[in-house]
Amino acid sequence: NDVLSGGTSRDELYGGADNDTLNGQTGADTLYGGTGLDSLYGGDANDILFGDEDNDWLYGGDGNDTLNGGTGDDRLYGGTGNDVYAFDTLTFGQDTISGWEDGLDMLDFTALGLDETDFTIGQVGADTRITLISDPGHYITLISVNAGTIDGSDFV
Image (tube, rainbow, N blue to C red; front, side, top):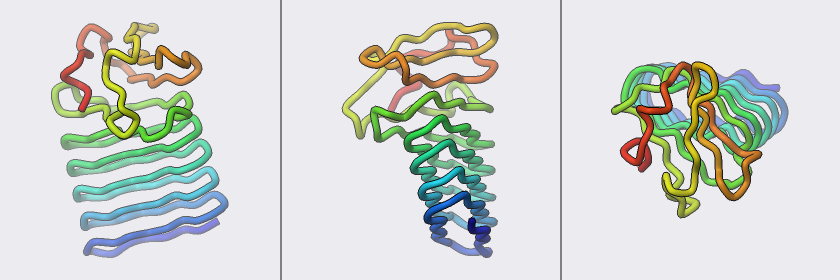
């Protein structure tokens, strides 16, 4: 169980096994949670956050951030800026994205060779659910987002 903090410049922080808390602070940081239930905080620049395994919490903060929860049911929040939510495994779980900014934020499934045609997009209460057609047990929920605003332009 590590608690790691970066400094004012570009940092790379590795949490490793167990439940870790990583805080990049200022600077363009890269944070790797590793296995365990991790909490990653990017900070004030353009950060890259990798949750890896298990159910992680990723917060990009200010800047144009890239967030990749990995496997597990992750909670992702990009913060301000043009954020990219990247997925590189078909077993991404049931992820939740808060603070989605339509026209600014993007979903990236290019590592999997997928695009918007591989998903259904529907309204569930006040939220949008984006479900993988080939495996409906894996989906992304955009909190407080109208499904009518999500289309191909929201995918990389």
